[in-house]
View 1 (cartoon, rainbow, N blue to C red):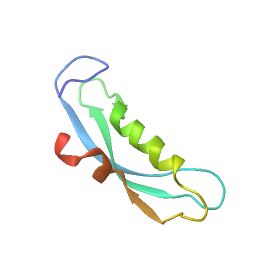
View 2: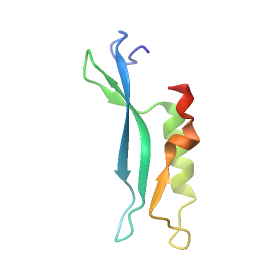
View 3: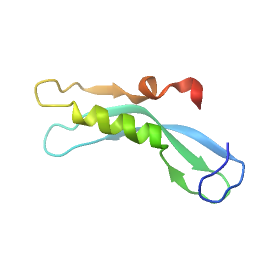
View 4: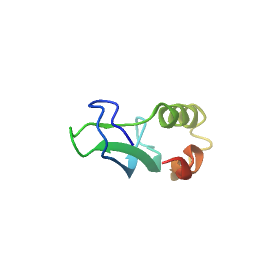
Length: 80
């Protein structure tokens, strides 16, 4: 994979877990693929990952709040 920042080969995908939102109830989103360049040190999410995160967060309300979400399933692990 090529880094979008420096244009060199050598990026890795690291799965991260994030708490998102505000207030007392913060949903935990697991397995978010974070792209990290071993050359320049840049870390970023792909557009597809950001889109999936936005859709997921738009659908979360206090009534359907779960403890954990696995974004890796939505993004498609096989595409990394």
